[in-house]
Image (tube, rainbow, N blue to C red; front, side, top):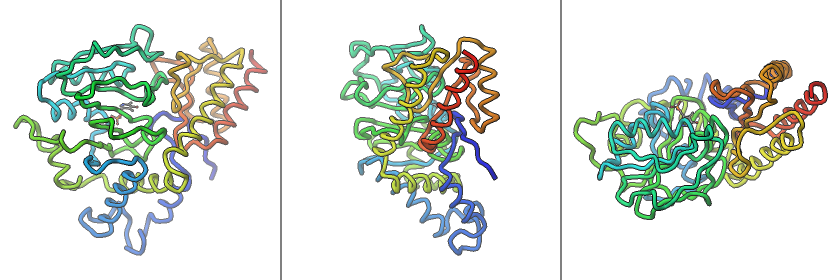
Length: 361
Ligand SMILES: *Cc1c(COP(=O)(O)O)cnc(C)c1O
């Protein structure tokens, strides 16, 4: 068996140790005589998995006690709808448009609320984070929605750059950078993330929500789309995505073992620096976003020639550097270097880039 370095943007690479443990436990989970996929979600075996996953996530993210952790389905996309449906009060919401996912969240929000785009970087293809002026924010908004990492174009909003009003809940889509750098959860009203980028397999979405934001919704909101439903039953109202939650739990354990989120951040900064340094010192490759806003997770670059990009992607794949092709509307290359991408993977990519440049520049 040989595994490639998988630079896919999502689903993303998972730690090999986690996959190995899952393989070891696949047929007989800890003497239960069955797979986690086959066990009742009401069994004590599963109950332990479910509780431990939540406990470990709380620990590594330092989630305060007045927040609920929910394991839901429907991906980050369903949160685009659930958030306005559940947080609606004044009926106004502000959206910070820093990428196509942020824009999608805004468009969905506009179905239910008076949604306002308070700033946008679409004028330059989302290649920077615009300045967010406090005066553009509405003090009676039900929330301000931001996307902390722009997966497609490769920009990020780190915690120090977040602008929001004290009394307006801050809602963050952290799908592609949750657990990659430290954020103070207490600054947010709600954080959500599809698991499949930096946490586990597709099928589960994590929602971390401050308790006071969980309230009765309009009566027509489907039961399954109410936070209250899931919160009251500890995400066991109906059958949860048990296996995905189990793998997420193993990933949380792996992060704990490796020093926690701060340690992940340090390695992620080193990995990103190696790649950006290579790009900045190259005569062939160019980064595609403004430097101060560069993502730690998704690194976009181009040669300037579509043909050379194609050749690069093809030859990279032949060497086990997989899924380096950019998003379909952006083109070029995108290396997604999530927590589970080892330093060796980034080194292999950098080496190949240098070699490719020597031959093709
Ligand atoms: C991938 C992604 C989404 C969409 O996630 P789904 O789980 O497929 O709905 C939303 N937001 C961001 C930031 C993403 O990276």
